[in-house]
Length: 468
Ligand SMILES: Nc1ncnc2c1ncn2[C@@H]1O[C@H](COP(=O)(O)OP(=O)(O)O)[C@@H](O)[C@H]1O
Ligand SMILES: O=P(O)(O)O[C@H]1O[C@H](CO)[C@@H](O[C@H]2O[C@H](CO)[C@@H](O)[C@H](O)[C@H]2O)[C@H](O)[C@H]1O
Image 1 (cartoon, rainbow, N blue to C red):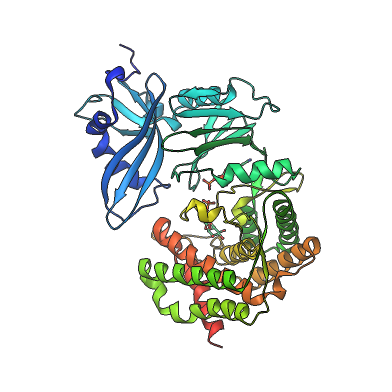
Image 2 (image 1 turned 90 degrees about the horizontal axis):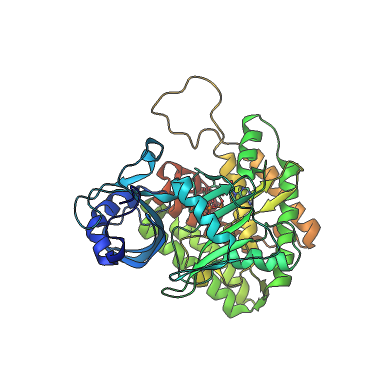
């Protein structure tokens, strides 16, 4: 028997697999950064699909049930070996004691260069494996044998860099359907928009229905993301207005390309009222989930009411189009040449896919960036000096002037390309900023509780502005 292959390969069925792995999954899944149901007890596990990628390596879609909330689906690639070399010890999920995998080491194969190298081979050559389909843009050559490395960052998904030439993003929480992170960059590439890396290869599943699972795109070597650069500027006490202005220009260019490539719609007053109602409902749901939000709820509602009132006064006809959907400083990469590129068109991972793919006012993205300048200004790295072990980083010091200057420069850059200055629509912008900060409070409460004070401080400000 191969030292790497699970024993009863031929007879391994999804229910049998779970007799071995259910207990381990219950422990391991909630510890993963990308696991979106943290704090909600896992009541149920089911295998949606199971495909052998190569001997000893299984592709899984796993459905997780949670008390009182809808089921989730996660993409896993599992390795199984009798003996695990020390370099893979950090990837281990566990060693089942029962079922067909008893005695084998089961591990996260996305941390195993052998498996991730073979995954790239799959993507290089169009084809199928069970329900999985591998496709590529024949115009781009992907060389064989590029060395894989896992990006180990704070990520909603898992990304692998191949030979510093390509990056593969595997979606972890799967929602059935076409992922905008493939759809939108593909449409933008067709439009000739050079601000977004064009997809090179991708894979999807037919089970239970056509669903995007991963996208390969060119890796921007030597690029630094906007969040890192913003924090550097803050730590050095330097301004960031020139970069913020360029980011505004880049956003407007991408918005123009999106409006040309994908459908746009005019929102009449009924739709604007629905937009405001959606925001109000998200606030209500957020206040149920994050008790710290509750004191601000009544004042924050006024931002949404103002938007609805504007519509009923007949003064608003908004244009909606496809947008980025989760725009923040970390989604912009600056190449050594100084050119800003935009990545990660997935939208807010917690929102239903259908909602993420709907046309929305561009103010949504603009508000995301304005919030991000505020985030950076409230997360200044502590001044050098002795730190105590029990100190949590953000927020440390807060620089409102830095944020105000960046926000103004960003809007000015946007206006230079678009012709419309977002600041001339304050009601629309404020409603979207409030909606974003509410989303952030839920996101932080779930994923990074130490950061919750950052959006809460902004909500406090937005709420007190409302009561003036
Ligand atoms: N084309 C690219 N070139 C270079 N780095 C990239 C590229 N795409 C993504 N990255 C890096 O990978 C990180 C995660 O990518 P992202 O698409 O934002 O994933 P997630 O949705 O999991 O947050 C980014 O913050 C960036 O550092
Ligand atoms: O992982 P994604 O990039 O898809 O986005 C999620 O995680 C982001 C944090 O990594 C989160 O962004 C929030 O924190 C940023 C600082 O780390 C800040 O710049 C953003 O303005 C703030 O929204 C994002 O909301 C979330 O969807």
